Image (cartoon, rainbow, N blue to C red; front, side, top):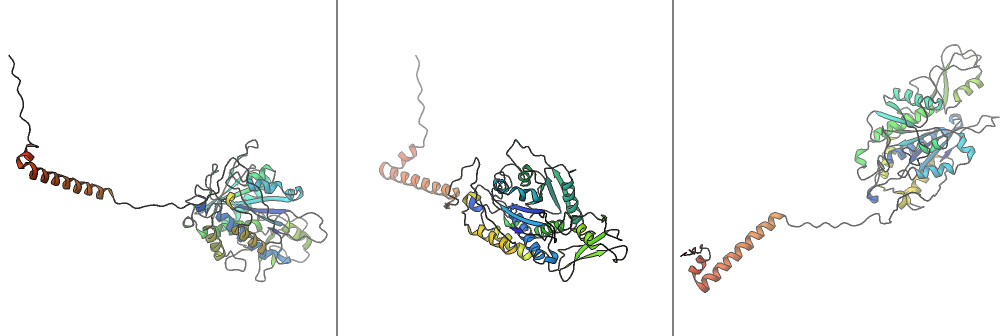
Amino acid sequence: GWLSGLKVDGDTNQLPTIAIVASYDTFGAAPALSVGSDSNGSGVVALLEIARLFSLLYSNPKTRGRYNLLFGLTSGGPYNYNGTQKWLRSFDQRLRESIDYAICLNSIGSWDNELWIHVSKPPENAYIKQIFEGFSNVAEELDIKVGLKHKKINISNPRVAWEHEQFSRLRVTAATLSEISTAPELLQGTGGLFDSRQFVNETAITRGVKLVAESLANLVPIGRECVDCGPMTSVSGLYQSNANLLDIRGKGPALVGWNWGNVWEHVWKRHIYGHQGKNVQIFADGGSLAVNPAYIQSWLDLLSQTPRVAPFLSKNDPFVMALKKELADHTDEVNMQHEVLEGVFTFYDSTSARLNIYQVASVTFDLLLLLVLGSYLIVLFSFLVITTRGLDDLISLFRRPPSRKVKTA
């Protein structure tokens, strides 16, 4: 799904792009039971809600950012993010080069109070510092802990642990937001039998959505000075008013004489909205742009009832069509790409079968039946011997025979 940013009159440069990506498919020993509520149903739900929120902002030219937003739902996640790799390679080179950075969402539905940002580039990288500081500032206001994990990728090894590594292989800055602190092994944490709805907390997803949405809009360090803005020391922030318009709130000298063109250029540069200052939330609770828990719950319930093992999904699978329709409702343009899954796995087309279980009598019943039958046979045998040969013959059967003494000369 694609949301187009707003170009300033006379600007001939291509707008930069931010990508928000999540893998939607699962893997498990029982494909028909692999619903993956947390991995990665929670990431899909978060992406859809973020798309809904920014579609509201981008629907008004006055609140449309100078960033294109690209929302990607990919398959092949359990298999080295094969779908993400093919999706990126299908991009036009200009589009790929326009991506400033990508945020991948993975398993954010069962965390307590700490999330991790996984990156491939060194933490000293300017883009990585910008992303982490932006998330950290918002996380502090939301009382959330955010940690940074750096894992260098091996280009010669086709195995990737995180979705952002496919971006990094093509020299696109990217990071993965996840509740998982360590890189998973192959086919680990891919939405198996035990990843069900009861272990996912929609409140955690709601907080994660707000963290990502606010961070995308608020990635300017506090107190950064505006060059050539006139008699002004700094821009304190942008905030969402009741009329859903972004205003500039300044501190310091009066507003008279400001060079508004330079001010606007400053606050938009390299960010969607780029407001400064704490306690300024675009997606504040109770407002028209607040995160919708009911929307999150409804999609989470659907994902928790829908197996999504990619090799068994058809091109026109109802679930895939539902995702496409939802993105089409919140973005300007939606494209679907079908690819053949490549890998070392062989999949068979039987995803479900009937297992018949029969309940039989317990072993106590068998022992009791053995005792009854044994007693019956003993009584019957004794009766027949007594009636045919007499009681003495029956008793003699149980007597010890007399010993024979051998006489020696």
